[in-house]
Length: 118
Length: 117
Image (cartoon, rainbow over all chains, first blue to last red; front, side, top):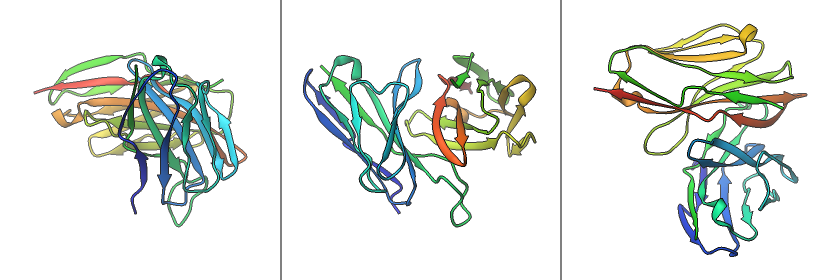
């Protein structure tokens, strides 16, 4: 059981480049989300998904796309990278309802991806 | 819209002192969950506690305790006899639940706690 995995751990992009941050979980969690963490700003929600095929915008969705074709994977796409997207990105997942005695809604976080856009 | 305010940006205490981290939230929903997470210097996010809006009982877990007061929309976190290993950034978070479906989670800006030996 690997939990929530994110790749890559570090990435440097040039302005205008596109890339995809990968996120996968092996806990059969219905809910997945992406956050960005910037100094003094806490964690801000970019996009989230309550199940396969369903996604919605969070607080700061501009410049990012997501899709959820499977329960396990929730990739985050940067369409045209900008220096303002320099940040640490966290993916998280959780159960929607209690499953096998586990509590719902507690989010499990991946280790993060540190992205620098020059 | 939901909002979480952690007014204390940074706190420094001497080891063995007690410290309380404040969290004030805003929501129009009657059903919601509150959380505390810890982010040590290594960077990972660690879940500490979850509390739903219908359970106002305070909780104690070892040196940690949480005081949930709906009347003041607060969910404060106290560390008793602080230790250097408690040094971290602590986040309070709020999620609304609509018909049993987990909705988006809002985090506060975090409080950085430094415990000085």
